[in-house]
Amino acid sequence: MAKTLYVGNLPWGTTEAALADAFRPYGTVYSSRIIMDKETGRSRGFGFVEVADEDAEKMVTAMNGSELGGRQIVVNEAKPRQG
Image (tube, rainbow, N blue to C red; front, side):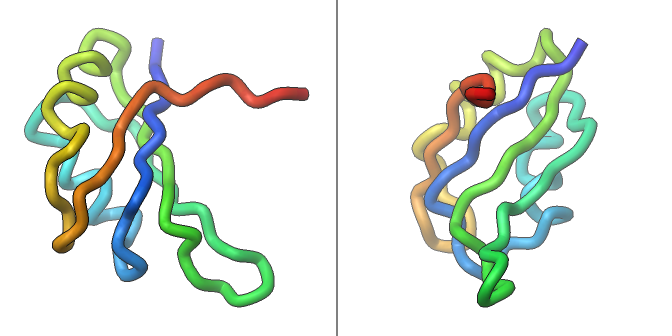
């Protein structure tokens, strides 16, 4: 199983690969995605990382409040989408 982590306050230039690489030292990363603004094509400053269930808590603890690209990021378990 996998869990999805929300990552906020990302620097505008963060790539999906860089986001995944930042989390890899703490466990298994399945995928990452940066949410882009449809009109401008620029990053909206947040994204999601899909990680192994057993590594999720460790990653949140390690990465929440850490620095990525000069900004202090916010990491927590993503809430399910409201349908």
